[in-house]
Amino acid sequence: MNEALATLSRTDGVIGVVVFDDSGKCVANDLPPPYEPILMAEVLRRLSAAFDVISSLDATEVTSFGVDCEEGSIVVRRVDHHWVLALTHSEVNMSLLNVAMNVVVLNLSRTSGTQPIGRQSSDSLTGRSSQVMQSTQSDQLEIPPDAVDRSAVQHLLTIYTEYLGPAAKPVLKQQLAALGVTSRTLRKGQLSDLIARLSAKIPVPQRQREFTEAVQTFRQRVMI
Amino acid sequence: MDHILLLEDDTQLRGAFVRFLQDRGQFEVTPASSLKEALQALDTFTPQLVITDLELPDGTGLDLISELAARHITVPIVVVTAYYGRFQARLAETPNLDVLSKPFDAPQLLQLLRRRLERAAEDAPNSAFSVADYLQLAGMARRSVSLDVKQGGRTLGQITVVDGVPTFASDPDGEGEPAFRRLAMLQRCQVTCQPLVGELPRQNLSGSLEHMLIDAARESDEASRSVIKAARIIPTPNAAAPTASAPQGSPPAPVTPPAAAAPASSPQPSRNQRPPPRPASALATITQGNSHALQEKPMNASKASHVNLNQIISSEGSIDALARADRQGGVLDCVGQMDAETACAVAMMAAREVSEAAAELGLGRPIGFQVSTNTAAFYVVHRADELFVGRGRANKNPIAILRKVAKSCGVVP
Image 1 (cartoon, chains in turn brown, orange):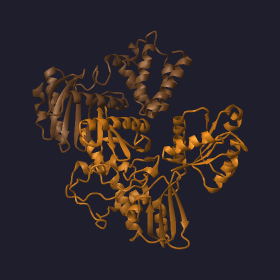
Image 2 (spheres, chains in turn brown, yellow):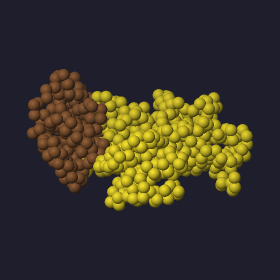
Image 3 (cartoon, rainbow over the protein chains, first blue to last red):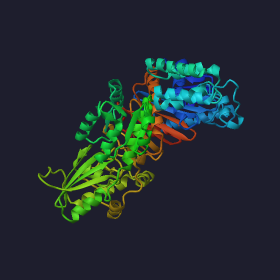
Image 4 (cartoon, one colour):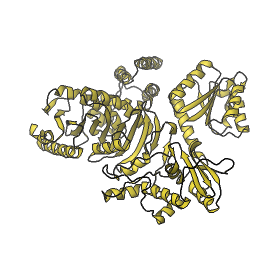
């Protein structure tokens, strides 16, 4: 695995490289101190969650992302159940880095014996699961007997929109996916967890409380 | 900034309304607590939209609606009421009116206002003649006229012609020839042509009308997607970079040279160093307009920065849509097909996470980020007080495109 990273690590301007699997476990790294896989995993988790919401605009999953900052960049590629993350200086040649990334992707896919595939069936780093992917196909959808009524989820979205604005819908979708359900398969027992997750995405604590109270009132009214 | 007349007798609610709308940064609100106050306000200005309650201490909202009709003020009206049923029959007869039943959600109101104002701007009748047509007519007849150019009630600029020769041009982004070039090729706008009377304005233009129009047409032509793409396919390192240009239909804005068409090392031409005109295509552009240019949809022109979204899209073929948002995620303007409101809101949320991640790794201030999926790529560029959110097709080197967009937006030199 480390050999697969060699091309990338040796590219001018690259500070370090690390590969994580879907569970967030570091499977290879070439990071100089003070960078540690544990820190990079946290950064990857944070960014993946944020970008997953953006990708929901396109109804597909993230295959790569990059963050460009004044002092350096983070470039991430998804390949065959792995995340390849390169940390670079700001003056790195992005075209060369891109080529090096391509080489790593090919090496990794050869190692695992499969072709690189952008869309994966499971993705625990972003909270998605194979269950979600399957459940999006309506013909295979099994609605549990204790599922929350869809109109209640719709109303929850209306309340949430009031507190989060236009991002409410994609965030709700993301958080449902993180729970491994859709708006139709959400169980009553999962509702509190969902509300807590949604609340955490509201930037102002006071508004978080107001949202929770508003939802609580609604739940009491409809007896969920 | 859209000016709203708000008629609401409840002090608390009125205050909340004003704060909420003004906090959005795109509305100027004149509050009135009674019908009398509202009518007095109408004597001093014409609002772009009216919000009114129905039950008032000295009348009803219907009285205000009647007065608007009597004054031939045909602006969108939003009725906010808890008594819709009582007035339903009469309200149903009023055109251009929406009703929000109390209680309602603030975002619901905001969405409605934006939609109605946007539609009102789109529905505003365009002049039969374009700016260029008026200029040519004034030139041929050697007339002295003043042209006021508006779009959706928003003033885009003025051009003064004295004895058939343009002498003065100004728009919110500047004066002189650049302003003339931005205004002259505009299409789909309202042009008021009035005889010039009284004192002449100072002169900031020199040269013949014909040359100025040809220059404006040439630059408009160069800004079109097809020309820029051709320039990218056949790079000419020694060629002079294009100068300012403004696709017609877009609000005037100083121009950032297209990154792909103008390499950083290319010498910039001076103001007087103009490439030779291309009369054939230029004249065609004067009369027919430029069909390639995208329409930029202004949502809050007063807050728009000096970045031309159309031009960025034209210069970067991988991007299909681009929106500009404030740091609260509110959309300021948008070019191309995109759910800009949602895209900007989620981009703003992601931007917060990106800033924290960058801080954790000691990477300094974020310039921007890109997210690719199998079918699309999203680009977000940070500026001090704005975010630019782009959407394009999936491609092989998105971070390089991100850097180009950041450059075009003036975030990096």
